[in-house]
Length: 160
Length: 361
Image (tube, each protein chain N blue to C red):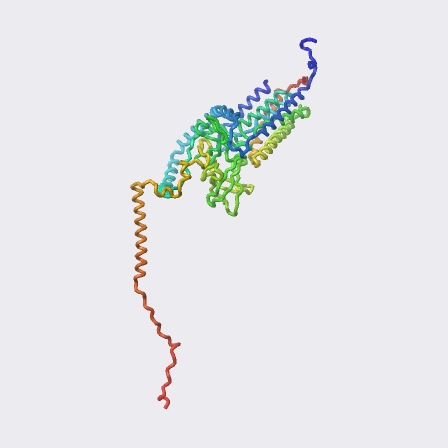
């Protein structure tokens, strides 16, 4: 509850706040994909049946908030969760820099999948510069994932 | 066996495995959602998903609450800026007024003349398009979706497909509408396609968004059809947009493709106007399609006093010019024809003198 539901609610609220049409000196607010932070951190905290379900609904929330193709972000988030879950034994206890590299790879995976699906669906590839405009703020959120892992990491290996 | 005993009591499954099962189920559900996407452009009537409509109806007020402090702050800064820069702004506006006054008079004169021509010829011109004004409360700015949520909806007549403009140019098109809110797909979105024309050459092209701030011009045909600085307007082809809506200025992109610098980017897209334009079938009177040609020639309304004076003045001038021309022609015809004269022979051609018989003896 404390490490799944509350962070999910915080992500929803932050995403709604970042959707405000605010322009300062000609620049808009950044629009990172906040649920990717949770998709990376949750499997490293501990495996859970609730987490991938919540990630699926967060992906549906992103579709309802932004528009586009339903299920794309849900697929990306759950896929990242699955990849990190599968490599959990490899990543557990690694240094922060190694975790950042894995986080970057997972974010690139999610964005590449989304890019591919949108390109095929629209018959038109999105601009790479615009893609970087969303990718970089998402990468800069890694410290939040690192904090969550250190805060909620369960050293108890007595899984059911 | 005790009540709580059972064959499954002692079965223990690693939590990672159960989590993996949920992951697989979620992946399958996501793929099914993707495959169920109904963004088929060939559908006869566009429909807005009821789930999305319900979400927008909830999101609108919430986003409006977040956007309110932004608006207040913007208004405050604008007020402060107007106060401190009042003198220079006043000077600039006076100069602009002096430059634009002759254009206004010319536009009024042309409008009167055009109205008379249209009435005399019985032309069916496009009726003025009704508009409703709305305000952005939320926006999506990513590379995959460029859209905005505005606070006007079907209650004010907004329908899917209505073009949206601001005071500078075309912003986008309505793709979904609820009672009080509508979703606008911007022209910079990956899925946006707008038929356009180049003002200078009347060449046709397709404005295609790609998530960046400057959409591309595709299907440009002919050499010299587009030059940097050309104005780009909506062409009206396909009936989705009215003709002549300003869009932007053509420019060459760094990748060598033609791009458009949007007029709508000249200011924040805050207040927008939704054109309640469905298609070109919106006629003032549908029966005018069946009217005979030049029907207005004998049924045009009588001109008022000023128009009568202008018409009589113009006809008097034409008559005077015609009579002067006729007088010149008559004078030219009545003048006596000059007699043709034989020219004197020249010494070189004079015949030799005849021989004298008595001179030799």
